[in-house]
Each structure stands twice: as C-alpha cells, then as structure tokens.
Length: 305
Ligand SMILES: Nc1ncnc2c1ncn2[C@@H]1O[C@H](COP(=O)(O)OP(=O)(O)O)[C@@H](O)[C@H]1O
Ligand SMILES: Cc1ncc(C[n+]2csc(CCOP(=O)(O)OP(=O)(O)O)c2C)c(N)n1
Ligand SMILES: [Mg+2]
Image (cartoon, rainbow, N blue to C red; front, side, top):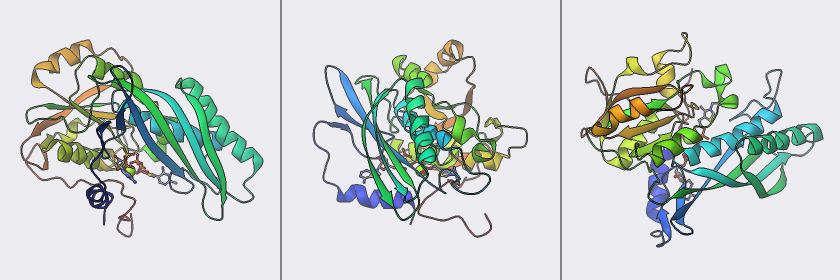
C-alpha cells in the first residue's frame, strides 16, 4: 500500500463534495466558497517526534525549530494554491513528563513564526500521550477565486518550472529553516503565469507524478537541470529525498518568456526542468522511464536505506 493508493480508496468512499467545496480532497488545500470573490483555503499537516524532527539524543532538534517547521510546512501548502495564510489552530499531544521548557519553546517557535508569516493562531487543543509527541496544525488562508492554482491544470506542451534548489534537506537543516514560497506562489497566481502548482514535500519526482496524475498527463524532465542544494548533492537525492518545500508548476508555452523576464524574486532561483506531455509517464531526456520515488509514510523504504 502507498499513500496514493490509500487516498484513491478513501476518495472513492467519500460522498461527492457539496456545492460550496470548490476544490475537493486531493490538492494541497481544500477550497471552500467564502465571501465576495474569495475562496477559503484549508489544510492540515502535522509533525511527529522522531519522524519530522529528531526528538532524542545529542542531535535533538531545538523545539522552537520543530514548531517553526510545523507552521512553515502548512504555509507552504497555502503558497502552493497561490494563496495568503490568515489563521491557524494547533492541536498537540505530548508525552507525560514532557519538560515545561520544551513545550514553551515549541509553542514559542510557532508564535514567532506566525508573526513572521503574518498569520494569527486562533485556537487549538492540548492533550497528553503515552507515545511519541504529535502536533497537528490546521491552516486557513484565502485566494481570489479566479486566481487559485490546483494540481490539475497542466497540459501537454506546458513547461515545468521550479523555485529554489533540491536535495539534502534533512542533512543541511533546510527542513527546519526553509522560507515557504508564499510571495512567489501569490505572484504566480496574481499574474496568471502558473496553470498547475504544488509544493514538494515528498520528493520532486513523486510530487511531479501527482501533478501529472491530477492533470492527466506525463512529463519529460531534464535531470541534469534540477538545481541541487550543494555540490555534494546527487541527482537522486535532489529528485527523491523530499522536504524541499519548493514550488513546481506548469507554464503555458506562450508565457515562458514573460515569466523568465518578469520574475521579481532575485533571491529565489527559477529553473525550467522540463515539459509536460501526453505520455502519462515520467521520463528523462533520453526517454528512460523514471520511477516516482519519494517519501511515503505507508511504504517503508527497502532495508538498508
Ligand atoms: N481524511 C481525509 N479526508 C479527505 N482527504 C484527506 C484525508 N486525509 C488526507 N486527505 C487528502 O489527501 C491528500 C494527500 O495528503 P497529504 O499527502 O498529507 O497532502 P500534502 O502532501 O499536501 O500535505 C491531500 O489533499 C489531503 O487533504
Ligand atoms: C527525524 C526525521 N527523519 C526523517 C525526516 C525526513 N522526512 C520526514 S517526513 C518527510 C516527507 C514529508 O513529510 P509528510 O508528512 O509526508 O508531509 P506532507 O507530504 O504531508 O506535506 C521526510 C523527507 C525528517 N525530517 N526527520
Ligand atoms: Mg507526504
């Protein structure tokens, strides 16, 4: 079982979304008709001790950074829809005996990040657990209805672009310090330059395969064009490790030049990685089929990895 196969099963079991649900389950956020010409974006993501941050030992993640990561990961999902984050609610369950200082630093990291990302924490829930710590954050944001960008809008012939660099996120600490691409996502939406978009959390190829399946297309990717975090980062790491929290998006052929000329984010690399096609596959420039490798909570990596 994979996450994708499980969610396919789940989505079939769910009743059809009501008329006010403009974007149903399966995208980075759900969208609900809200007010005027705006959609309310809603998403929830968690961090689990030992899974998303190191919770024990000398390399334990500073709790403020684990908290910051929790919020930033959710903001990244709003960015991927072209939206602006507004509010969040935080539900946490922490092991009995969790030190007061740890808890205050964890929450403090979220409060500080909420200030930086300009959103308000408006509620939550606190519980104890006998197992690993889990904190789940629900984020609410907004986007003009005519600007929202889903995973489903790519067409054969569109160019595939990415922000930033890929790979070595965990080893480099990027997964704790990244800036969600909110300004970039918002700009792409406002300018009407991205037709399909998502943020890369599970790995470039696995998440690209999700844009392709939602868009009913395939893609050809130039693996040598994938910008890597450092000289030591391999192509395989850049393609499949995940937690890059960069945006990948589809751009119509007649908008490519405009995008490249007008890209206003001098500190955010913008790279063309390839082209969407009708193959239904992921392929490299030599025509080899690429496996959509990446992080999957339901299929543990083969022994030795
Ligand atoms: N219980 C659920 N009911 C409906 N949709 C769900 C449920 N759990 C997860 N999903 C949806 O499945 C998709 C995949 O989830 P996930 O991999 O966690 O998303 P993301 O990578 O964007 O954080 C998302 O669109 C998410 O909203
Ligand atoms: C202790 C620890 N081990 C491993 C990782 C690497 N890692 C954990 S989850 C994950 C993928 C993304 O997390 P997920 O919960 O799938 O996020 P989502 O796709 O829902 O946004 C990666 C690469 C990490 N950050 N910390
Ligand atoms: Mg995931």
